[in-house]
Length: 259
Length: 295
Ligand SMILES: Nc1ncnc2c1ncn2[C@@H]1O[C@H](COP(=O)(O)OP(=O)(O)O)[C@@H](O)[C@H]1O
Ligand SMILES: [Mg+2]
Image (tube, rainbow over the protein chains, first blue to last red):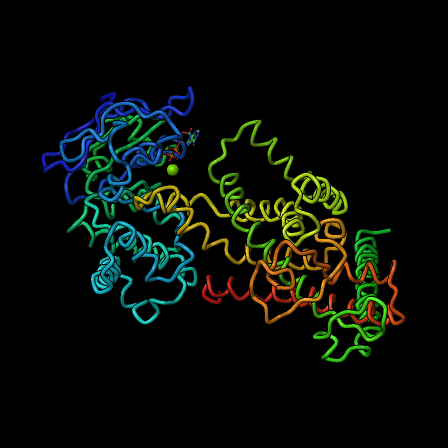
């Protein structure tokens, strides 16, 4: 077996990293990592807890600014966006993020979605209405909440809240969606709904999703990267990673021998 | 004794203590209301006070208390919002910040008579503001600022980081995240804090005796020129508040009916403070429910 197996997808690449490494203080949490993510596909980041998946993911939209030292390149639209001169607020409009625990704002359902687009300059009420409806439809939440748009988002169930957070993220019309264990706080039924939603969203978005649930990775993702102690050992089509891993560590992990 | 008995006994003792506190409270408030209220008629609230004669009211004192409260809040809310936001969201986690936080804690436990004397020496004498509403309002600000600042700081700190990251991840700036996402979330807590502190300010006497003064020149409520000495809006006039009035009636009151007026004024004071507390609960709960959608 090999030590590493990192493929470069044949598809059009939407975002990639070159030797991206992350340090928290002196501690190297992510060794230089080179990965390329194909357009309109879902890539799963798997690996044991503490292996650096979130660290990597959060670096992509510069959420680790001020928290960690991130070195190396992040190539997005032919630009290295890991440079001080890049406007991170602008960048985050293009690279949306959904977190582990649903974090709706203490606002109405409508405002949760409309707030950021309005701040970014869309003031027209009709245009905002449209954005709200479209985002909620895409996040498969419209039918459940269309009569309650003026109710507080905090009254929704956990699964609904998480789909609202997805709607909120896609309302910015990002091209990339980062998801950090988006289903880990949800019950199995809500998880199922969420997974279907994600697969549906593939039509329009390139997604990178951290998950500790291997069934979930096989169900929804096209590519899978396996992290272990701050390094990526294997990156390939999901089928290959799970049925025919090239690296011993990956094999042990997907067969459940540890992690 | 077995565990169950000990547990039972502990619970009983605690219940008795709570009972004592409750009974004491009811007795005090009941006593004040029972002695005070029957003395009162509606026009007691709208009559000027008397220095010597019987039958004085509390019109001007009541107005002074309200006016001082409003001014003190107008000054202290923006300041404490700024300070609270800075401490919770921007201040680096270092020695200087801890030092400031400690100072604020100390300041918030200063006896109000000390704050009052500080106001007297610095504002009334040094800055030549005299016994005035302005001196009083600024002194009340010193008295109120630390509490309100910690109230706001704590409210912000209790919001989870996920909310901050949620805002930042949408491309909002740090300030926009604070203003648009964190602050609305803390509104119920902040309002509760403000209303409770209003109650404290309203009932405060010691900090005002030597700052806003102990005399209440008769006011003319038709004169809205803030520069005129008889105008209720004038901030440079001395202004005895309700709480100071009560203190004064009981220490050097010359009126024959000082006892009666003082009892009645105390009842009004207690009622207003109670009202503030009930309002704080009501508003806090209501806003909370509105925010969480009745969950
Ligand atoms: N904010 C932080 N400060 C310091 N160390 C951190 C921080 N976040 C994560 N780490 C460390 O970095 C390593 C990788 O963490 P993380 O990326 O969260 O792992 P995963 O998402 O795979 O569970 C862990 O050892 C973790 O303790
Ligand atoms: Mg993680």
